[in-house]
Length: 173
Image (cartoon, rainbow, N blue to C red):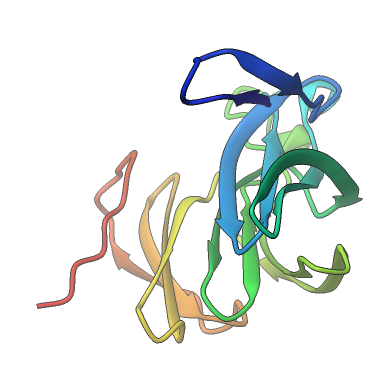
């Protein structure tokens, strides 16, 4: 992750975020950003970590590495309304199903950088694009065979549509 001075467009600092992967998603609140590191299909190319970067202290900009924790195979999207919830897609390799791992939803305390709980999403593979309702009660995500919803604790997972999509946008009318 590179920190850029928006006035001069100079790179002011750089923070390494993962070993074999690149950042796949960044979520921020108050003074902290959490970077999700996601990898490739092969088990040796996956990443399982998130890192925290504090980007300001009062009004002083900074870029301080604050910690790294294991959350699950290939974290790729998150919501941070009341609590930080991270969707991990697992590993999905249609040519070698023995390598596949199920997706999971992980609740993290972002201030202490601790995993609070992990909920496996049974028979869900390659979950992505986590979005939440405005009251943080229901989540939606895409997977290999359609669009799903679940409660905010990762239970009552059900397929909403069999349409396969690469993105998801929630609009309340």
